[in-house]
Length: 479
Image (cartoon, rainbow, N blue to C red):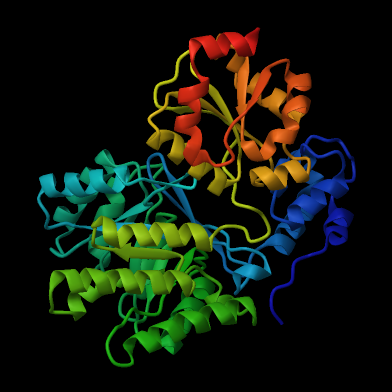
């Protein structure tokens, strides 16, 4: 039987039933619904946390809500990445939690200038897509020297120059220990990797340093499960990550996909705890397998990464830093990890287009991600300086939010107040999308601002403002 979510009634029966409202909800039943929909956490209930008598209930609730695939946290000096925490095999059944983390490698044989360059590219990589900032997540430090001292120096250098979580990569426990010795809290690195030859030493290191551990058994799922069982039961280590191997070539890709799919299926559908852990994939391995043109190798690495992200990999280690290999990855990850039950939305609030001042026009739009992206992009292309007031319409487009009463005068008034718009502009004029024309009177009554109906298509914003945003026209509007 696959994992089944608890019902709100099951959760409600275990809650304190104080209806205190400290969680932000009007009563415990509403909080139970939020918990079941994964829109709230148990820690949001102060009585559960503060009352020691309720600790057993807290643990029971935690167990009921726990995912079949364990969630593991990796920490850098300033950034935290969570991997795993999955509940379902197919996205439409609920949604996928914790987007696949993407790590870029650094070799301990690289010179420091090259290392700094790679760190800078990784940390500054950012792509603005439908109002979201798409970024990379971690750095994997590989020991090609197999020298503990050299590895420790590079680990320390990376930690001093990067805020991202670190993955320590070596099959030599002495090398891994040297890297761990130079990392101080809040760092919590992932150790890669324990194998059939070094598992005891690696597991003991992971336990001593309280670090998660990758278990690797390329091409041998029986050994992978056996190592997982031994390390989690005999050693008592719970934060583990599984690597069934990453292969290409005849039969290689087929095996890889089947291995990742089998592990996730057994975790979700059979609730088999020895495989109920995050999956790590190493598309970087193609650089060893292929001896062809570099562009072809990068192409294969990107293909493997995209494929394994779709087939349940929770963490990827890559080498290429080319934009054409990384951009499809972060865009597909964004699509894959959106909630199919909800429209994709951007945070509401006030945005700047160009360099607006107190006399610049104020454009109104909704927080549906695609609408926001198109409007902001068209306004920027028009080279206008304007304020963009994004209204919380629960992720609905303009025409839908008007029909569904999600774009209202009250909401526009709240947005003006929360964004301090009245302190940023001298005039009191809003430009409404043409598809929201029928809301003109409602918004004017609620806000006291003059509302001008703009074009139906945002591509016409530039031409519209050229005609309307003139001193003589503004006098007419405000007369």
